[in-house]
Image 1 (tube, rainbow, N blue to C red):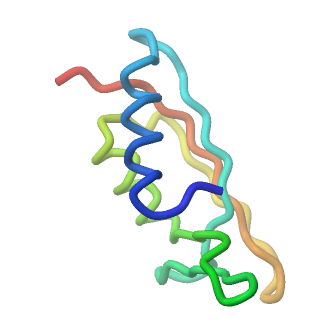
Image 2 (cartoon, rainbow, N blue to C red; image 1 turned 45 degrees about the vertical axis):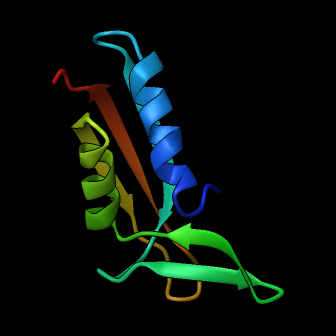
Image 3 (cartoon, rainbow, N blue to C red; image 1 turned 135 degrees about the horizontal axis):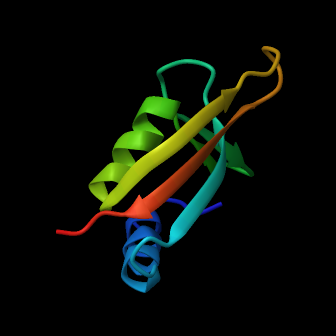
Amino acid sequence: CILGPDRQTFLANIHRLLKPNGLFFVYSKCSNSEIDEVIELDGQPYRYVPSQQNLHRELEAAGFEIRKSDFYEKEINEQSHCSVHLTRRSF
């Protein structure tokens, strides 16, 4: 799980290294609501759980084009997941 500004650095590196027409696949925990969640462990941020909409915004802002996205909703006490297929957008 990548937290904070490291997320932007990670995505920028993936974008830079991905070949034209290459496919980047993201499988992430996603919030059941439109509100992002931060899970803590021993009082420290441990896991970031974005909403599907905010995950999409983050990936598009990093220069990716969403080709396909699915949301797998779980029960209230379990985390839902998103899968997103992306390609590198040319600037």
